[in-house]
Each structure stands twice: as C-alpha cells, then as structure tokens.
Image (cartoon, rainbow, N blue to C red; front, side):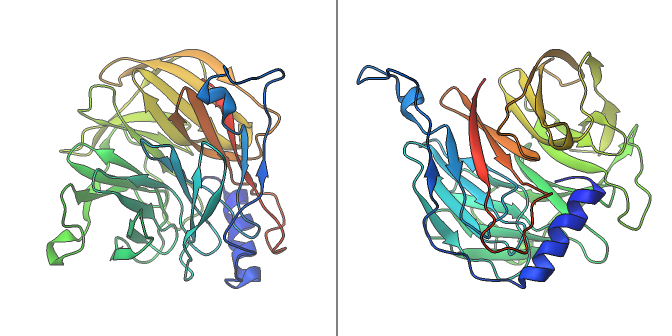
Length: 328
C-alpha cells in the first residue's frame, strides 16, 4: 500500500461505505485454461489464472499456506477472505469491524498476523476459524502499519509514516501481557520521512536470502534498504539495473526478489546477494490484468498478485477486484 492518491481513494471509499456488509461468503471465479489441456496437464496449469474477491472487498495483502490456501485482507473494513488456489472457491474468514487490513502473513502456528493501517493496530487471527486472538495497539497518532514478514526471531511490521519497525517475538504466546509489540527505530542510511503522514516511507518488507537481516522498500526515497534487526541500522541495497520506484509488496523466493510496483503496473525481478546488499535486475513482469497491484506470493511455480484497484469506485458495494496468477 503506497502513495497519496491511493490513500485518498481507499480512505474516502471506506468512509462512504461505512462498513457495509459484503455481498456474500463466496466470490465468483474467473478462470482461464490453456487450450487443449487434458488429464495429463499439470496441477499448476489446472489452477485458475484469475480469482475474484467478493464485491465490496478491496484486497491489499496476501499470504499463502503450504497447502495452497490464500488469505487477503480488505482495506475497507478489515475483513479477511480465504480462497483455495486449486479451484478458486473461497469465503469470508473474518468479517471486519472497521479497522482496515493491509499486509498479512502466516506464522508457523497457523495464525495470520495482520497490519492494521491507519488504526495503528496489529491483529492476530486464527487462520482456521477466523477468531481474532489478539489486537495490539502498536502506534497511536499519525501512523500506517503497512506490511509484515515473519523471520529474524518473530514478526516485523513496517510503519509508512514513522521511521520505525514493530516487532512481535516468535512463539506460541502472542496474546498475553508480555506480547506487546516492541519498536525498532530505523537508522544509518535510512532516509527520514517528514512527520504528518503526507509522505510514505517504509512499505513492503522481507527477509534477506541468508535470513540474517530484513529488506524494506522506501516509497519516497525509491530505494531498497537492508536493515539489521538488532540495531535498526539500514544500508541502501545497490541495484544493478531495474527500479523499485512505486515499490509496494516484496517477495523473496530463494535468491530471487519480486518487487510489486503498484502505480507502474509491473513486478520487477532481481537476483539478490545472500546478504541482501546487492540486487541485479533480471526482468520485468507485466500483465494486462494488473490493476494497481500491491502484493504477491509465490506458490506452485506461479506468482499470485493482488490488485487493490485504488482508482475504482469503492463507494459502490458492487465493486470487486482480483488476484491474478502469472508465470515466475
């Protein structure tokens, strides 16, 4: 989630909707199959190429389980939707009560860790039955808890309006008195964001391939940073070609980095050094189905990209969006 135009669009739509109920538990499915695909076609080719999210549900983040179940949250009211990537069927897992859901990830205990946007909240949700296990107030005042990655000892959340990361330690207990998020200030080469919420800083977040540090894309600086999770010291990743301008969600798969560039309607692909200090541009993925893409996940040899459709009229409860599948 990034950019002043996108923020105005979805915040205005959310206010207009006033938390209107979603149209129904199942989303329609748009499916494209390769010509001539028969029983011998691979499972990856049989999966739907395009999955529709429910009307009145503006998706932003994505997490995919090892069994091919995708989760995405709504910017409008925080609802969480789950879909089976094998056939595209889905349902609302948790109906939101107002605070938006932006980035989200699964942890090893079957919980969804959800960034709460301008509410400043972090929510912990049971991925099986949708129960909200905990709600943490990570920030107050002007804040935008944007994205999350699980690694480096726990879960790390970005705040696009403040030069900090929020940390929840790994473990079974994320709901007790000792589970409040800790704040890590970004330092070193990190470009500070002016206060007031007019400029966007930290957005997408991932781990380096060696698992020792974090990668954070900075919207205003149009730069990628390697962050030491112990100290918050940030060093700018050297890009050999390509761009991270309009960078939103990040995906690291092995040594490959996918940068979802929302207003560029593209995903730029890089090969990373193990420590994340250098990135070599490989190619750019474009697709006519991209409609302000924000985040992505890799599953089954495909890249699943979420369309937030910031420019759509979300005051219309019939407005819907998609998750699209592309070759890696």
